[in-house]
Image (cartoon, rainbow, N blue to C red; front, side, top):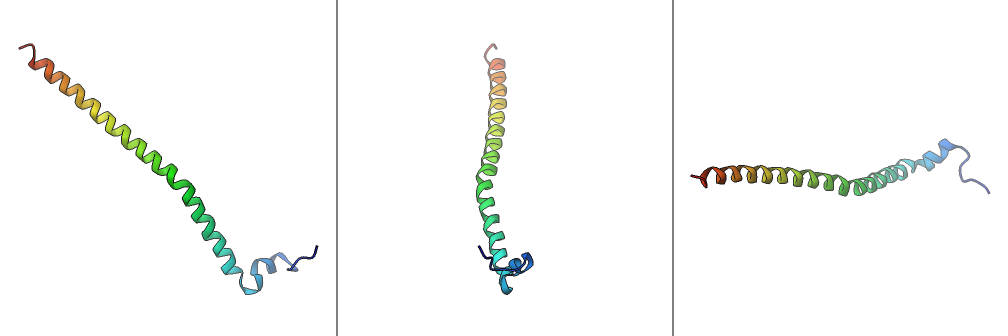
Length: 74
């Protein structure tokens, strides 16, 4: 097997095209990473929001039960 490049530095430079090749790899992997992480982050945010809303509803129900209890016996 014969290699195209004589050194690792030459491989990275790729006859002057290395900056374009390696930057495209970086952009691609960054995009794939973002696409993989975005649903997880969104799911956690939605779960926190739902839990917050649930706590609010539970507090309102407790307050309303106390109001009803105060009004009914009289």
